[in-house]
Amino acid sequence: MPRTSAAAATADLPASFEQAMEELEQLVARMEAGELPLEASVAAYKRGSELVRFCAGQLDKVDSQVKLLEGDMLKPFSAADAAGGDE
Image (cartoon, rainbow, N blue to C red; front, side, top):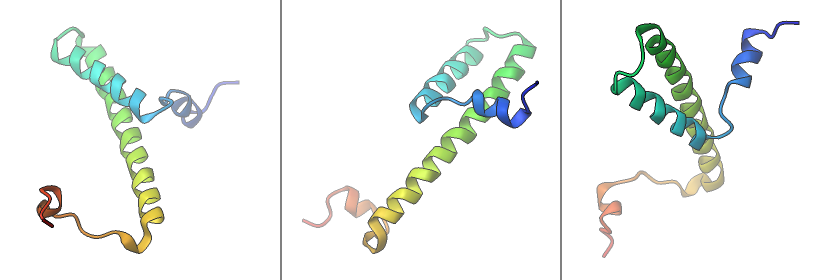
C-alpha cells in the first residue's frame, strides 16, 4: 500500500531542529558552490523550503511554551535590557 503524501512528508522530517538546521546548511553550501545540476538544485530548494517550514514550526512551538511558562512575567525586550541598562 503506497504512503500518502502527508505520511511521506512526515517520514522525511528531521528528528530535531538542530538536524534540520544542519541539513539546511549543507544544502545551501552545495547550492552556493554550484555543485548541483539544475534539477537537483530545484529539488534542493524544495527540500530547503520544507526544512525552513519545519524549523519555523519548531520555533513557534518553543515560543508558545515560553509564553505559557512565563505567563504575566513577559515584558517587551529593549536594547537597554541587552546592554545592561538597569545599572
